[in-house]
Length: 291
Image 1 (spheres, rainbow, N blue to C red):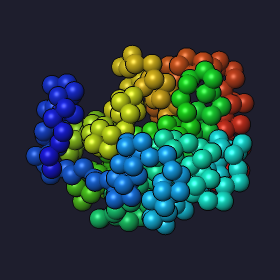
Image 2 (cartoon, rainbow, N blue to C red):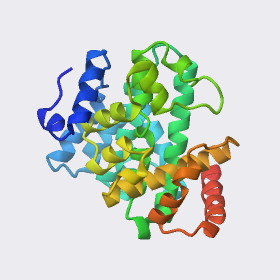
Image 3 (cartoon, helix red, strand yellow):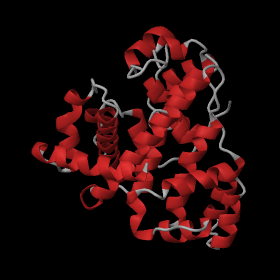
């Protein structure tokens, strides 16, 4: 598959080597579905007629249904209820709605090939983390300046390199123990077994799908918050890490990464440690009410 030279030129030498290695292994980057291509073309040329844009989105019943489900979140409570796609576009905003459509579309662009159950579990996890990230962003918007649609987009895409690798390597799911409750992939184990890195793969997917730069950087470094000095990307990773932590807590699963990132996450989100338990309770209450 060919990639935009400007995208490749923006990568470091190490990243270029990693990407070349992945392409040589036959890793394929998913294409955007037609409904998203059409929507982006109309938006880029300045189309603001909500009737036209809503017809484009409505052409895909699966995306439309999921969009209605997302906007039932407490993050959009001030605009509810929504009766039509047009009403969502008007209340949430065209650009923001496009972000949500992008997040929805990636799942349909990566259908399962080997392990249907593992794919379903992966997307359930991703959408749950995205919902939690959206609620965190809404609660901390005055401090973090990250909007709910951006957080949802990052939440769905942050681990999208995993299903890409699942498609490429039939043994990836079993080797990474993804079919076992509470287990998750590690970069070191990925590299040892497959000479691959789901963060780099996810970053490339994000660049190819034209996600905002700071979200792409957050995808690349979502396990390495202290390597980021870009404020928006670092804040996004903080939101993702807290969302992941709350997800694990809701699932009653230990989060092995939290102790190493907790201090950086709270600093970035402008939170004191003693305020965290109450904040988590608020997010979980809103999440469970939506769910």
